[in-house]
Image (cartoon, rainbow, N blue to C red; front, side, top):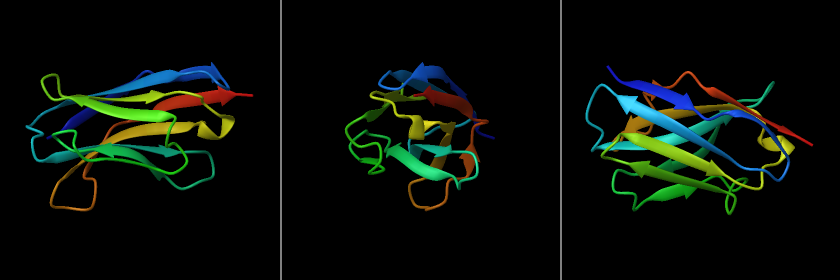
Length: 119
């Protein structure tokens, strides 16, 4: 069983920064992609960013490119999301998730952490 626990959410003014962290436990993650998703009120959950085990493959949603940075520490089994230049439209619940490299669907999810950006 995999457990993912997010932390670091909160309230910030537009233009500010937050750093989210996700701690993973329960199995090895050497063959797994780690990702961040978000869901705003009344909207579907959307992809934000992902990173491979080696860190060599990183992807971002167009809406966050140049502002967000994903990173992982395999020794600690953590994945972070540094969010800069935050906008009110970044307000959402942010979820950490993981999937096996060979599969498309993410099979384990965290409980989510709220990020609120005020204008």
